[in-house]
Length: 103
Image 1 (cartoon, rainbow, N blue to C red):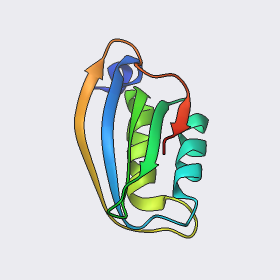
Image 2 (image 1 turned 60 degrees about the vertical axis):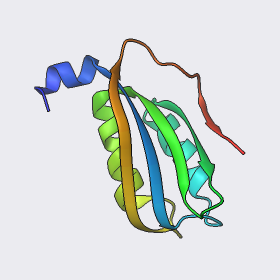
Image 3 (image 1 turned 180 degrees about the horizontal axis):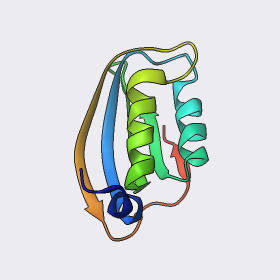
Image 4 (image 1 turned 45 degrees about the vertical axis):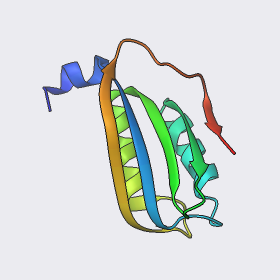
């Protein structure tokens, strides 16, 4: 990673998929809440295979905080076994507004 000053001003977008006991435990609601608290935008939804997928966008340092939250913390009743992050890229401006749960 680059030095912290440039990390704060750079915008990142990253896709995620979270594995484990993450459905039926308010994972999406807590993800939305955490994203908004960090000032991020994005979306989150359940999959038919029992995982949770989504995308977050915002300042690089806040995206890193969200990645840690998604992989280690999650909702109080969740049990995360694996978090996969993909398609991480720098963006000039955020491409979505707000933080939404998709169905």
